[in-house]
Image (cartoon, rainbow, N blue to C red):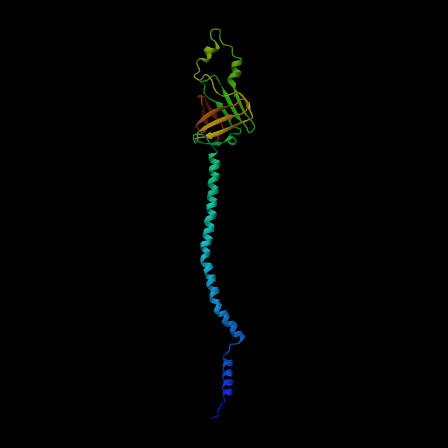
Length: 210
């Protein structure tokens, strides 16, 4: 057996160690294997939260839509609020081209109320007839009018460019005329095309109004 010196033993050990040293490629592959599980774990964490995030966004969007819809319906349906909490709606546009004709004979009037986009016109056809009426010598105008149950009406004959129709409590309507001849007149709907004025005069219309 050959006797090895200390230097020979040291060199032999160095040569043996070099054979176990990994190459640059092996080091890179090892590094990839070491860090690959961390990347996969992070990606899995994001994917697990993705359905929750999407659900929150969808619920938030639906909530905003419902809120806007409720506000729009409240605005369109409620309109203004009166002092006692009742809600009124401006329905002037739906009364455009509507004609209310008096049908009752319990007053010395024969009203026609015509609605248009630009004006409100109120006629009293009885006045036209009354102007040409000549009573009998034994009967005065007072006696002729005494038979009527309704003596007068708050309606004002004329043409008005500043007006609106408001609806309150589903079946109550108020005509509001502004300007110098300011007045209001309330109607109650008793049938789809029939109304009764605040003094009791009855009207009908050939069209349906809101």
